[in-house]
Amino acid sequence: MTVRPDPTDTAPGNVDRLVAGRYRLAEVVGRGGMATIYRAEDTRLGKTVALKVLRPEVAADRDLADRFRREALAATVLRHRNIVGCLDTGSDLAGPFMVMELIDGEDLAARLRRDGPMLPGDVAKVGLDVARGLGAAHLRGIVHRDVKPSNILLARDGRAMITDFGIARLAADAEAALPGTTLGSVQYFSPEQAQGATTTPASDVYGLGLVLYEALTGRRPWHGETSAQLALARVGATAPSPRDVREDVPMALDAIVTKALAPDPAARYASGNALAAALEPLVGPAEAARSASSSTSRVAHRRGPVAPIRASVRLGRGRSRRPLGPVRAIAVIAVVALTVGGLAMVATADGDRAAADGSARPTGSARAVNAATARVATRAPTPAPTATPQAVDICDPILDVACSLGAGRYAPASFRPPVAFTLGDGWSTSRSSADLLVLSRAEGLLTLASGVKPLGGAADAFGGGTAKATIAGIAATKGLKASKPANVRIDGHQGRSIDVTPAGSGRKAVFTAGGRTFYVEGGRTTRIVALDAEGGPLVLVIEPTSGHRLRQALDTADVVASTLTFR
Image: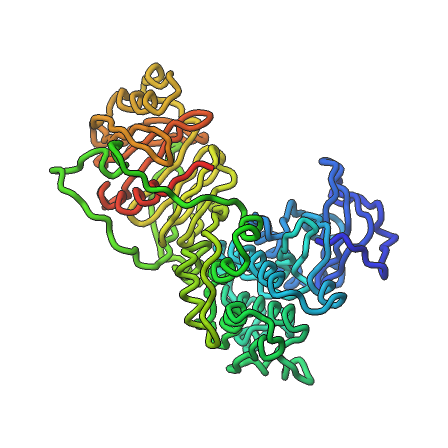
């Protein structure tokens, strides 16, 4: 939320009022169609926040009040540096409320009113930031539906942030909650919103395309005497080119905006992350690195006498295996049951292609992005790529339902030690905490664990606090069959690898991490790798799911492990 007070409303009756026994209201800093936003003091933490209270006339409407509660639910799961964070939700005598970050800055609408069109480089930077924030929401299955300049905050630290998911709903919710109604601001409707059709992440891409057009040209591409005429003017119509209004707009940026404004959703970028990948080469490596959630270097593939993970233990009769070709672009949502403190894959299902399609890449090859942009441009070739792919934070599962991930480079912010890795299509986050990260797909699970504690009478073998001692302790666990350990090296870190299988038909507890017990399932071979890292060994576990063999899990998980870097 911005910190600019609203001079027309000092809300004298609410100043100093304590909301929910914790938040002391100050002046009004903004008004929306559904809520009033106050500057407030969190008396428990001693910090200034923005408190968004549903307006009384809206709270009286049950449908609108329910929509506000859905906003709060959606916003609480979004954590990204380009999204204004929701810190708390609740209700008191005044009605439902949300507590949000208070951002020092101004919204884009105020900036454009004051200064007019922006420099193309600044527009690309704002677009990149907002696209990344939208991309994080899209991976969650959340569509904003109201992307407009007044919902984009320009923070004084240089970030652009998307705010007011006030009409956003989980994509899984039925669009028919209020039949015949359309949500959003008519000036920034997508064609499908104007027709009352289902909205998708591509609808947000269109809205951001309209914002970028306006920021470049100082005008909106569509006009009409009434709201209905304005909304329907874009249905089936191709938007004008920004360069038709302003010749100094770079052709590559013009091509990106034109594609974002395609009347057919299938012809646009599929999500915010896909649009961000297209904008990233235009921003430049320094700015792209500053605007990314974290930066990583390219993975260095090392060759030498130390065996890679795949080759560390022979399987079956020792036949060589070639890596599979590109995985079919399909998102798999894995529902993970946490039973007896352990992790066990119990079901998979196709995810929402619109939210996690293979084209919705958080990052990607700058060369591939450049080539895709060049196919759109009509006036001149796209410039050579100038930025390397940047890592983004990983989304967390909700109520043990996995969060689908697009192909790209990831750096989980909460996991320790800090690492980054590259995923292909089809992966999901099944569990995420400071010391346990479970990535799942149809063939198996890849678990990263730190703070590993031994089980099964192997505590003495674990005592060395090194990768070698950790693997020795696992091998010494009673009731396990273990292969001969092999040496591995990933990103310059030495380690050991072992394959284990329970001696009997039942599962066998091996270690605990993140408050959970890790079991090796009966009848399955699991690969465990330990790497020496700062603060103690990092353990990687590659485990096939029911009906699959270790070699099938390795075909994808081993590729991910080989891209692991320590930040």
